[in-house]
Length: 325
Image (cartoon, rainbow, N blue to C red):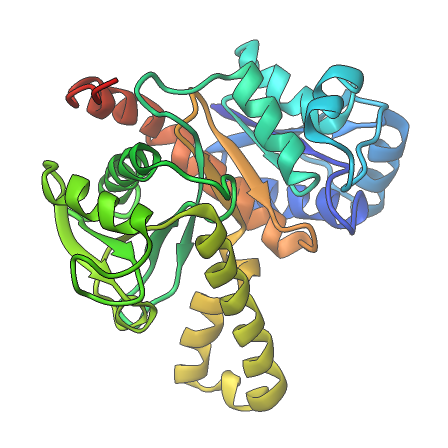
């Protein structure tokens, strides 16, 4: 049985909503995975007792140090090894769990995963990958904000990682890979996108060219590659659009069509974003996540780890031509 470590003190609503989400996941896991809650032991056990959980799929590991959302990522790794966030990743490094989840400081989670788990050889930088909605089902978008200053090879690496994920997790055969841009023409956009377009065009990927945001929403691609700055802007825009939907059309969302919007656009249903390109599984959940989102993030962690996606990405990258120095 796989084990997933969860940072019990990560996020705006920790530990209560985090622990409740762990209980929801354990009760729905059907024995596919168990959960390790990392946080101040007495406090976590107190929250766990409030839920009335009596099962054996949750254990608690003491991690007394706390990480603030605004702490410097590198400082967290060095000075707070006994925090829930770092402990979750360290447990994976030691082989005691197969995935790590935190709704806390995303930069610290990224740094911890980078330093403790390491990159897959051939992947220049890990990216944040998230399944985002379109009219034809989920699309994997990456990078969603891990890297705001990008080099062309990074986006090409992410395209390969995304294609493997789409095949292994989303069931897409020969997935369509698109490059987010302001127009379809090859020479459109900043120098980065122009260069990446030519590199993807020459790759072995099923590259469909530049994809405008509207075309992505219509379902024109399976994997959407972008720099972290623009990817994060698009992701947060979609989160805001969903909140506007709820405010304006709350009653209408209870209809059959409305249910589809809730399923695809509500981040509580998506759980978290995957740090892709690591030698392991790291999931960053939303800082505002409540119990249903934590449950979804744990399910996502299990899905990625059980699918052995990191190994499959490593095999894909090992087969790629090495970039020229």
